[in-house]
Length: 180
Image (cartoon, rainbow, N blue to C red; front, side, top):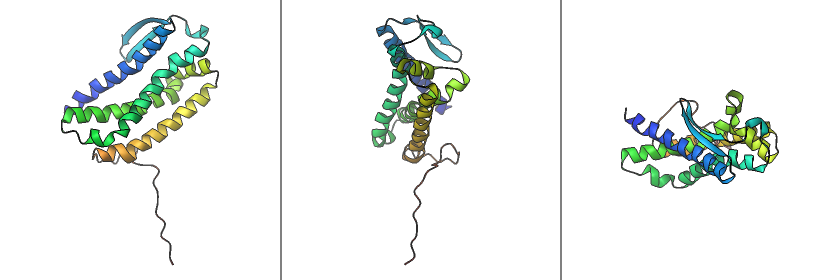
C-alpha cells in the first residue's frame, strides 16, 4: 500500500508536467482550446483539427513536453547519489518513480504509442517535416538506452533487487581472460 501512496501521485505529477507543457506551448502559438481529464489520462485540446495541422509550430507543440520530461529525467539521474540517500521514505520513493517515469514514459509514448493510439509522434513528424517512422525509431533507441540506464545505475543505487527481464541490464561489459 505504501508503494501506491507515492506511485499514483508521481504518475499524476508526470502527466501534469507533460500535458502542462503541451498546453503552455499551444497557448503561446494560439492553439490552446481546452483541457480534459479522461479515464485514461489528461488531454490537451487544440483549435486546429488534426487533418489540417501543418507547420513548425506543431513540432514544438507536440515535441517540447516529450524532450523536456526526458531532460528532467537526465537531470535527476545526474543527482542520483543525493536522491538515493534521502531518509524520508516517501520523498525517496517519489524521486525513484519520477526518475523512472521521466526517462521511460515519453520515449515509450513516441516510439510505441503511435502503433496503438496515435499521439505526439505524428505532430513531431508533421511539424519538423520528417518521417514518423524515423521519429519513432529515434525515440525507441532513447527508450532502450534509458531502460539500460535505469537497469544499470538507478535500480542498483536504490538497492532494489529484481530478476524481472525488463529491469536487469541487457548490455554488460564482459571481462575477457587472456592466457599468457
